[in-house]
Length: 272
Image 1 (tube, rainbow, N blue to C red):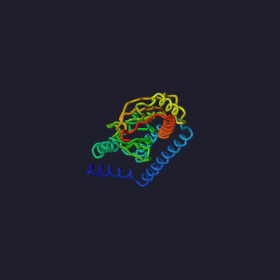
Image 2 (image 1 turned 90 degrees about the vertical axis):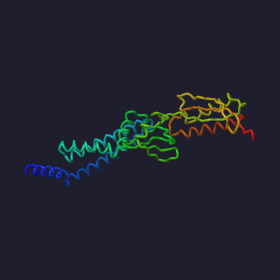
Image 3 (image 1 turned 180 degrees about the vertical axis):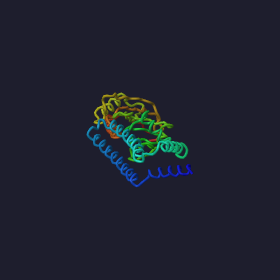
Image 4 (image 1 turned 120 degrees about the vertical axis):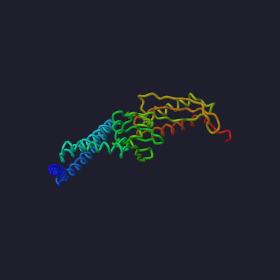
């Protein structure tokens, strides 16, 4: 009789947690968390507009604060409103761990990977990265996924766990500047020295160039259109990754015009 009475009392105490007032507080707290997260995002956007040179740092801090807000805010809200017994907390924690380990192992792996990405930092928000056949700028690092925008303005969502096991290359590693490469093919009998001077002149006069880092050249003999040619590769730094393609296009267009104006020989197919 005593055992039955104790069981009933326990069930009633658990049921008493989930009253309408508690549900209202949970909903209100959830809305408040969302509002704070939205306000934090708006503040970070305004700061990035006012301090563009520090936009990567601002994005990283904003992402970290959002992580902490959602994780600790949700846990604190549940415990503060429901005030469950310790036994119930331990039981719930064990159940959640088992569920994540078995039923949601892929999501759990992505969650753990997301935390590892924040601390290991193989790339950061704002980096230009290559992942498989996808290249673009990291715009967010979430609890489960990483989102990047390609140069064709496509939003790509990738599970965090993929970044732990696969190879990812970061072009700027948290810096604003980044190396940009452009190739020019010249005939074997072309004046390579003059071509290099002309292209270097274009690079250093470009409004997108970051001149605190050196401009480099690499020459290599390659086959183009079934004939041998010299590939002149220029390596220069753009002052902001957002201007990557604008800088590359500026180099190619103006250098091509100069090479043509100075009669620098380009490779031709033997059939032409």
